[in-house]
Length: 385
Image 1 (cartoon, rainbow, N blue to C red):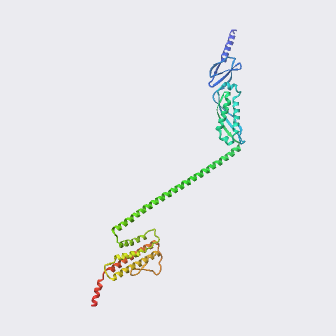
Image 2: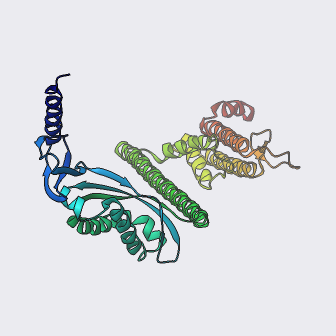
Image 3: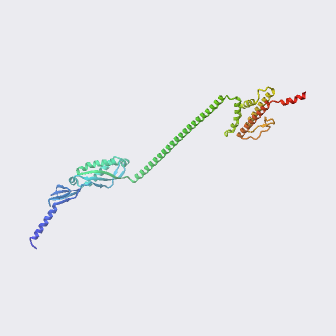
């Protein structure tokens, strides 16, 4: 081999080594700290960079993206002397690669220890229940302390979160029992409130129902009374306008008595005392007061007496529940022995029938008494002669 070729090859290798050593390509979101003869020179930015071969070297390569660091569970004592294990997660970002490389030897370990000490200081002033319910407050205080401490390290803490808080097993059982009792209490309270509201609504509904029914009944009674009053007023006006005779009124009174007995609600019916006067009025109405003579007046009195006797018998029949007996002349008479009693409605109907029969008999006797008797007088005259 030619002796000149060997030195040229060596020179080419040296040139290639120097060129490769002087060129540094930095990826995106990366930072390289360059030292020259052991002293910090500069920080390489992403892209193509040139350094002095042999004199410059890369000391640290840092990632400036936001990173997540999850610490192991650490025991922490609360204010009420309970040991709980707390697991935290940390979100941080390197803002100054030079400080992160030269201000602290291991920034992750420093952040972890600072988080533990700060967490123990914060939890030490809280009891267990406050610790379990104050995660937002704990996170804010941790972030404030870590952000102040890591600022000089070229690191910004964006967020600190408590991932888990694990109390002892006995405390967990006690808490479960307490929560179960609280839930049972709330369930019982809610059930009682529901029953109370249901009863209140039911009572209000019943009250409104009773009020509406009472108002409806009141309106119905008022309308019914107004109708009856108008009917009575019209009848009264019709009677006075037509100037009705008292005899007609007495006769209508007697016609109304059977209708009173036909009602289904009547269990006891008493014939009023005005029946005698009504019968006497009707009897007098059918008699002839214009014809003189004592026999006619006597017969009219006998008819009135017969009507009174019929009234007495009818009253006794209505009270005892049996119709009165009549003699051959049609007048009622008292029975010697009481008969089996009928029901009240049948007794009233029978009494009304007896009253009608008595009125008919009285009418017939009144007509017979008012008619003249000339034939008997003519027959008796020739015998005297």
